[in-house]
Image (cartoon, rainbow, N blue to C red; front, side):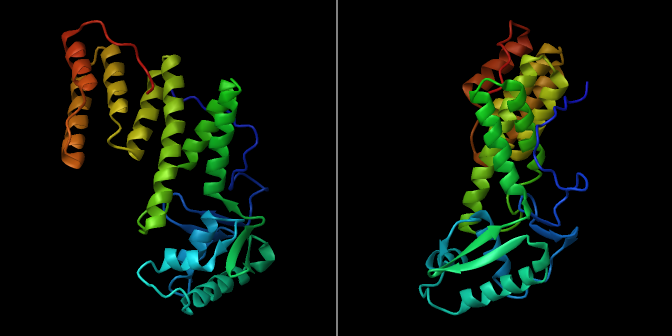
Length: 277
């Protein structure tokens, strides 16, 4: 059975049809700024690209220049160098090349800068919007709508925030977005288990492990599902994958619940109820 596809009420999806925005910024997976489908690659100033990325995350909010110096040049004590002006000039030169598209506007205000998103589509903005709507629908007990928005959240999460790039603020933002994706995937996994749709649940388990390969509760869910299907070889295989990853990457052993679950499934005893934790 294929993974159930649910219609999401109204999110804007670039590439859908004639409503496609001409300016698109993507931060999930590799960074990409596109104008009319073509990637912008000529960031002339060394820190211009990094400055744009930081202002994009803080879009429509004023950021003081001292904060920008701390983020872009954390090793420097001098926060009054001309480096920031050079980076700002580099961003302006890029934005000026597609000024008629009205995608972004960079404003200077009181010793700082603000990046205004006008007609541009930004994946991290849509990602957070989808999750927030899913959470609100869940609280309102409109679970079908919530699941549709959580699926939109998962679909947008095609990779970690700014994959391959480093920096303290990048790592922090990456962890927040990873956590948001995992919460959406947890809801999708739980809903599939409640419907006893094993293929869909396995799909969401796989997506979860793509985001967090050490998520032990997901290995437990996979073990229980294969136990329900009397596939004991697969139960043992997932346990071994879990143990290897925890030992090799984190230097820890599977927890007591995982060990008890393995023993019960391999002995064919009554199995614990499936959960989407």
